[in-house]
Image (cartoon, rainbow, N blue to C red; front, side):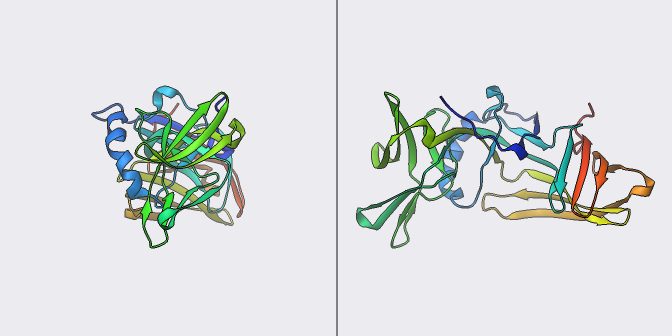
Length: 267
């Protein structure tokens, strides 16, 4: 049976489809992201989310946090509102660590709890990590494709170069890995956040950030602005199209409910 990793803090996520000339990222993922895995290796991350509607997989989405009209509590320094664009994809998450030395000074590895995801949607059992799983002692680096194979209830995970197996971890059961849904942000598209930065008397302080994250994990075109509200004048905050209600706040935590996320329709 396939399993899904559930991260409780990420249950408070909603999404809307972005209106774009293409409705599916299938062709682009197959052609571009399979290649870019090598370029991204070690420089991007994949968040593991709760189960999603399968019809949304590999579609460009606008992912909003948190769910509207739900009460949330976060700590000072945490993001209270987040909006980003990206897509969901299938991921394999090993629960074991594997390191194997090979001829020519190569060391092949599988990392524990690091997602290895399927960027080639035409081959559902083939995955690629966003780290170099092949490293040579003289400095060479390579991203091997990872294949999950099953026979009579026993699994093996192989690092493959073309049709050849570079290394296989055999004798695995379903307890040795999870199948999960990951989220990858799209390079160059704007992300927006509001962060809680504390309380002084009746004054609450926040930081609004707007930025694009490119394929080198470099924040560009960034914009930040600090703003504050006075609780004596009301507990509803409206900023940059977002609207949220303050239920309680200390210098350590804030309890709140979001009514609108950066222009999302009020429901």
